Length: 205
Image (tube, rainbow, N blue to C red):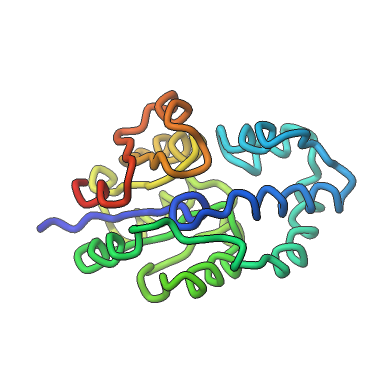
């Protein structure tokens, strides 16, 4: 069997963490005096493309935001999140055959905490978070080169329209999961190669 490379977003794909991370982003914005979010819709709109690009376009001081995020993320309570039901055995099955990488807008320390808390330790070969690069397209290109993989055999699994657009810009195959932060309709508008409704659908890919 030809090797494939599977790249996963974390929040919304592996872990149901919307309430926690909306609150975290709001806290960071409040801490720097730039409370730009009025509603959950405003928050989700930030993920129609790259999150960091979106907040800068709204006038947020990115350096100040990142500095504020450190201590706020350190207080994140993983018990307020939950893993996506049925996903762990599917990922374990895929990992027996193919390398797996996390590519996320979150910080690596937070992601490692989530993986440990929910039993995903040892499954992912690499984690590329916001500490590495802010552009998911750039992180995808890095992972493809590092694993010496053909882009036609590389799949990015995400839950927002921005995930799909950044992965498509990098030239890899795109898989949108309908159990995450953006609706199925919003994901479809980003034109992914696949939209899946349950974790076991990954095995068909």
